[in-house]
Image (cartoon, rainbow over all chains, first blue to last red; front, side, top):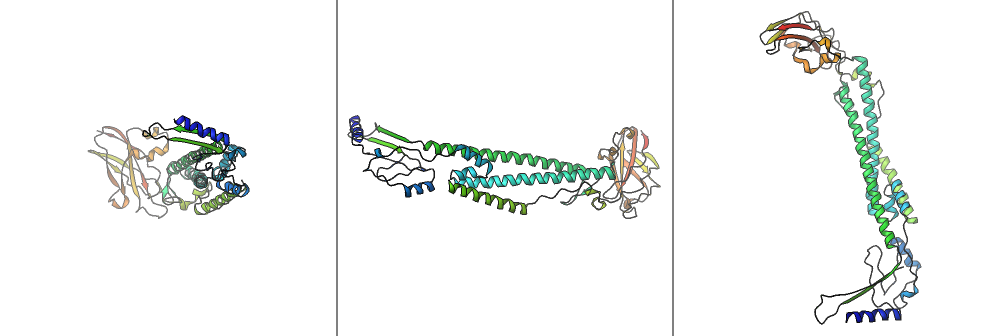
Length: 229
Length: 160
């Protein structure tokens, strides 16, 4: 019974070339095809707005058979990754993902600054250590002298050496944190670009299904097509 | 795509401004010169106490050794007096001559005790050495709160 109804539907659709059922493709970013109004496919909302102005509307009456399937705007994975590497948040801004762009831009700015700060601090601590070591050797090599720390208090050469080691450790941690941030950002960029490009492939699909668990005396037939152009 | 380029440019501007603000807010100190600590004012204690103390003799007294440093005339050159000095006493069972590094003479590992100059009634101090029996080596220094004098002569004593 269901099969017969379905066949009638599909045959009538193909014979008369008029869509009987239509639904969106479910993707939030790319609106689904709808038989009652125009559908604009674009890589981002801004491009979609542009298309709305330029492309004439397609209504159900005209039929989708007049339209040539075409892809949406593909995003270059290489460009996105290179931008992400060179510009903080650049990859995410490139694919119009402002939220992630701002987040990673902030993280990268902070990360780069911390790297610069740690490096400067390391140079400063090294200079203090070398200066204290030389002075101790020069003034009284048999004693551990205490030198006034610019941050307050007095420190021996050993203390300055520990500060120097700690500063070197901070640089290491800072580098690791930056690598982690950049890697995470590129992974996010990669997956988002892949998702966009996956949805940019032209398609025309027809799906139908018959429910088995409906009450007796009822029939439930669902048919949909996905048309991306 | 033009809009994306614009956004990236805006992002670059924000980045530059952020970096400038960060650099103004959190500047690391500039490295100091190699002779920075050659400045005597940055050295705790200034000049070290001089001359080194002299041990005149040791006497065993039960678990103590009485150190006689009569004749010691150590002063703090910065104040010209000895009133603020503290005398440190060190001891070991091995001959310090075998110390590879002179710094070992001032290592707290060999530290036995100390006394302030003002607490002295005479230049004799009892230093606790316990029930050790055998040869011991004792020496002392003077400390002005920042720097320690050279060590005194090392005095040997056979404890019973």
